[in-house]
Each structure stands twice: as structure tokens, then as C-alpha cells.
Length: 206
Ligand code: C5P
Image 1 (tube, protein in one colour):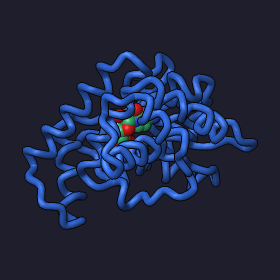
Image 2 (tube, rainbow, N blue to C red; image 1 turned 90 degrees about the vertical axis):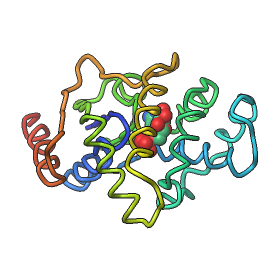
Image 3 (spheres, rainbow, N blue to C red; image 1 turned 45 degrees about the vertical axis):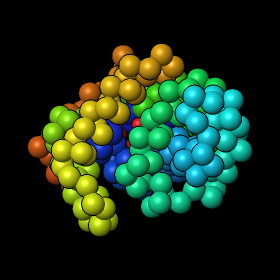
């Protein structure tokens, strides 16, 4: 069984994906980490966001086994990730890896922006997770504050709105709900209620 979970930044899609994977005993891939790793590598090596060939080379050289999720979740990396993610050659280099993950025997849970539309269009269950920008910014702000990052709520909200616009507006695999995805707006739901609602969608499949 393949489960595709898509949605905008800080919608809680990662939390839901991890919970469903644990519940079903399936492997899970946070595909945002791949784009974050390319974005972080571009920042580290000084590759310009306009240099699409060099960005594609960074994507091609990525070692998915060695990704440090904690470091890659830091604030500035998200912005860099959404810039490199708009480059078609970068997306193409990361395609096979994600399709192979989705195609492993027994199935998998993947979360991202284009899982239901591009990576696993035949997934048995597709969930498009969303919440208002305000609610998502509050969650992300709390998370960054917990990590000790010095940001204001307004900065977090602005970052989220900019990423939403860039991810939805790009030509290549934009963020959008697959026609057959269940729309799940979890504004006002806490983590546990959100997970419970997603588990109920899986139970409905049986
Ligand atoms: O999900 P996360 O916020 O970690 O993703 C970081 C960025 O990576 C997103 O803003 C988006 O631009 C990009 N991304 C993507 N396609 C995916 C997953 C992430 O374009 N499947």
C-alpha cells in the first residue's frame, strides 16, 4: 500500500506521515528533506540559485542515507529548499529515488508537495493536509522557539506565505491537491486529533 501525503509548509503532514507509517509498519520518506539537502548544499558551497546545472549536479550527488533531519529543518534551509525545488532539473534528479522508494514491495508512506500528483499517482490513499497560514505559522514558530532560533512570529508567517506562493506558483510539479486526494484541513486540531483523523481515513480503506 502506498500512502501519499501532500500539503504546504507546517501543515502537519510530516507528523501524520510518520504516525501512519508507524501504525502500518511501512517505511516513510520525508521528501522535503531531499530538497532541503540540495538547498543546504547550495548555501554551503555558494552555488547561485540561478546556476541550474550546478544545482542539478548537487541533487545528483545527494546521499539520501546521510541526511541530518535536525540540521536540515533549521529556518533558512526551508527558503533555499523552495528555491532549488522550483528548478526542473533538480526535481528530475530526485525523481527516481522517490519513485523507487514508493515502489518498494509492501508499500511506503511519502510526504511532500507532489507525491499524489507526480511521484505516486496510483497511491491507494492520498491526503492533502492543510491549515490556515496563521495556524501553520504558529506551529512553526513554536517549533523554532523550542529549538532556540531567534525569529519573530511575523518573520515565520512571511516565510510561510512566500514559500506557499513559490511552491504553488512554479511551473514544475507545483503544490496542488490531486483530484482524488482527501482534503484534510486541520486548523484548530492539535497533534493527537490530527493523527486520529488520519488514522480514521486509513481504517476507511479496509
Ligand atoms: O516539506 P518541507 O517544508 O520540508 O519542504 C521544503 C521545500 O521543499 C518546500 O518548500 C518545497 O519547495 C520543496 N518540496 C517540493 N516537493 C516535495 C517536497 C518538498 O518541492 N515533494
